[in-house]
Length: 236
Image 1 (tube, rainbow, N blue to C red):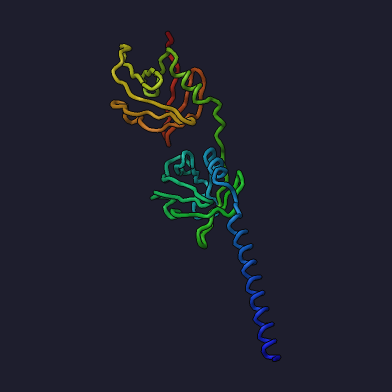
Image 2: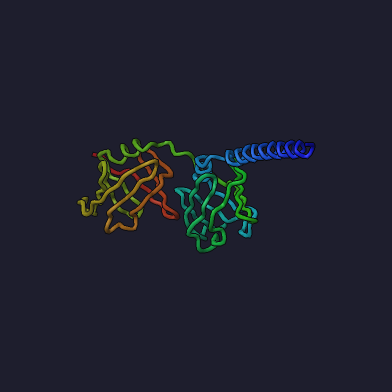
């Protein structure tokens, strides 16, 4: 009878301990899965507008990395091109892609382990990257609607390279030296990015250009290392 009692008590204790452990594991799992270092949106906002340095790697501390527009552009201390690629982020994991030169060893998925506006720590296995913020772009104060209004007024714009342009709501007009239109193409704007499409003679300028400076009579656009200046000319 005592043996039966002992077995029953032992069985009860084992069941109780098993349930208690399961509850503890569930709590720990919940803590692990709900912990968020920084929302993806915050990381994007930090990386998009500033220069960053890899400070604890084999890279020289003077290597500048630009993460704007979900692209990666790296430059050395002289401002010369060092590497380029792209990046993405999902659930606290940053993926560095398509790098082939200076940053090639850092391709892959990196987990964010610490983040602030001026510092981000990433890990991949035993590897660690520290990103420290450098200079930041000044906030552009022109809205998409304002840029559209400036460009589509009855004026022409002098473009870098000596070209003269005119703009309607969706069309670019390219003028020759006699003020005659010799090419038409398309443009659009969204979230401070101007996109030029279907340019033929000026096909080099097709693509997405970030507005880095703007006003009623001057607009600066950048794409990687390339810069376009638009200065307002004659108005009707």
